[in-house]
Image (cartoon, rainbow, N blue to C red):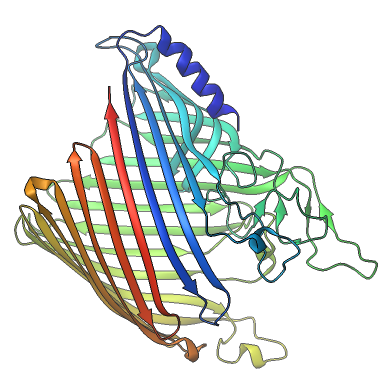
Length: 492
């Protein structure tokens, strides 16, 4: 957690002695005002959100060198304040409204790292601080160090270690944790109070490695491994026993451990083929795999097909590991037609199957539900189209999905236009969607939304914008949202 601050001090020390470094500072500000009524009537949620991000990048810290090693620093912080949070939402005594972990103005250090490239003849690179890793295992963040070795024989090796970024720890967020857990700072709660809200005060050690191809323009392939540990003592019984006690578990244990592989072969005049696979060691299953083929039939037409399978897996501390669950698979065909530089159209269609244990129509009525597997099948498709001209565009997006469980269908049209040589811009969005749920027919509805927006760019890389959004359907009545934005970039 201290890696970001330490890295910042290192960069300050380095930049004092540098003569030719370049800096970039950018900031964005968003203000949102909206009120939501639950489909059940209560509660009414009022939000007054203010989101501010601030980024700093420093390049060429090593000096004015045209070749050789390069050293640079990147960072970004986010303040996501909500002045609409009511006191009851932060008061454990108000069980009807209390939200564990709700903060009025949390600060998130999104990333802050010092990176070096091209050391030891171009073979070695490193990164120290809070950083992201993106591969077949997902989008992930940790505090620590990463080293990379680029070999001359068409492959590179990465190894990294540190601590997973988690909610409840300083200047951190929970968005990168494993699914199925609700963690945070429990310092204001009693031991047995809100036991589903797990303690997160200990750092979660993580390590991983990757091997990927380099230098072959038509081939991209990467093998990745990652392991994360839990260390906090947490309550594992949902209810007290006869004596009022709760069962806990502590010590080092697996949070997640997965191995992933991805491959893509691309030939510019013929087509592309790719696939990926993820094995979850904790669950003991292949949780994800997919394959795709694309044929570049002509400069105007691309045809493709894909198969995808996904079965959800969860953090080792999640109660969902005890419940049965199955995966879903999709078979899709797609086509993209580029009629001209102004007009293009895309089309997808196929089926999606959901596996369940037992018959979903009778499962709840059986004293001993069957354990055999059933499938539910949906037919789905999308159609997109775009028309562009010199200072604007119109985009159409439609989708449809239907099966035994219900349907979801609709579309939206987005129009963008520039005025005054790009100084002013306009946004108009309208959408209409209809859905039904066979298990909850009382939730069937059609919803209409429109958005009116505009902005001004008085200086290069600086934009002011405002949007008005209005949604209406029979479940929630009328919903309104106002969004104001400011984006600013300064180069030096």
